[in-house]
Length: 412
Ligand SMILES: NC(=O)c1ccc[n+]([C@@H]2O[C@H](COP(=O)([O-])OP(=O)(O)OC[C@H]3O[C@@H](n4cnc5c(N)ncnc54)[C@H](O)[C@@H]3O)[C@@H](O)[C@H]2O)c1
Image (tube, rainbow, N blue to C red; front, top):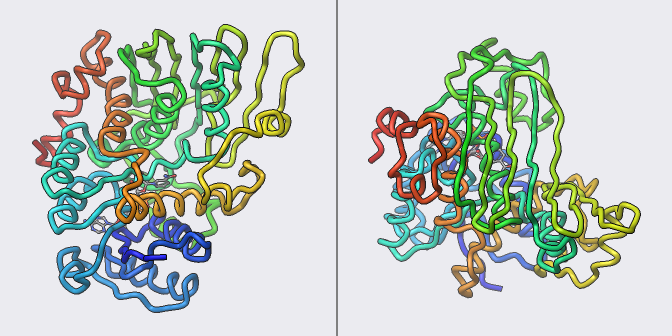
């Protein structure tokens, strides 16, 4: 099979996980990419990732601290996998596209809607592909939920609940995740959720929302569960406290284009805790929108609750793409320790397939923009004190909240 040369740009926490994803792909019969190089503006991060490549893939990759120098040194480089923090996605991705490279970029597509638009325009201008690494919808559980909805198992959905409350004042993964112009916790987690909501229930039409900052000071945890060496070292180097500037708590009502409504409560801080995900239809209810490593349950009138394994057995017609079938032969990722890496491999594979064979991208620039815009619609609605339409937010006609971020970052 033809293999495209790919470079990883951004060798931090998630960048390290993308290397594990690549190992899953190159060890599969579907391998269509090979790692050509690593790039990070921080020399120590690129060096640590190079050691990881030797361990995972068995060779020493070329390393760079400058994207343009890398592209010049490797003339047949076809694509880059961009895993930098979101505040620079637009600069790195636009530069890569202008250098003639195809791009896979981690979610959120960009720090604001205008930054997303710059990237979409750069892809069009250069005739290159732009794909967003949105992982949650690619899990078999999300595919099953979508399959059940498409088959009409619960009838027409009329309501959704998406409630995810994780309380506390700990530093959420990285200090930058608490800073409004770096991509706060709502945008960081929220795009996963808006993507799932749109994947299962279609586009959002209108949003009424509220967003607040409840924990203005974030505190370093004594220890973290992540066993990756990069995460452990980064944790050691963290300050004990981080002043937060980005909202951590949100509530909203989404009016879907279909006419359904979705109740949204998402926080990464504050008080309370727990979660509740339901999709309610005229004939039943699906518990869970699907997510990495998760399951779902169905309640329909006249039957006992139908658990995930039973659902999979009853819906043997649910097809996954061939590489997903290879990774998840039981069509479930529950308890699969490698699920994170396998889904990343699916994302890398898809872009290479799109370049080589014209496969359609599942989450392209326009889709990624909608996910970002839906989270900002909550903040824009809170700022404007009224319901906003997605059309207003996606076109940046309503924009006061993001204007401050764009001004700080020189976007626009
Ligand atoms: N899909 C998921 O489940 C998931 C999970 C975690 C993170 N992410 C996403 O991955 C991205 C990275 O997050 P992270 O936690 O790895 O952050 P991080 O801070 O650990 O890593 C970011 C890396 O990018 C590098 N970098 C910054 N600017 C650069 C530039 N101009 N050129 C090259 N390298 C640059 C930094 O030096 C750092 O090594 C974010 O977009 C985040 O939302 C996604």
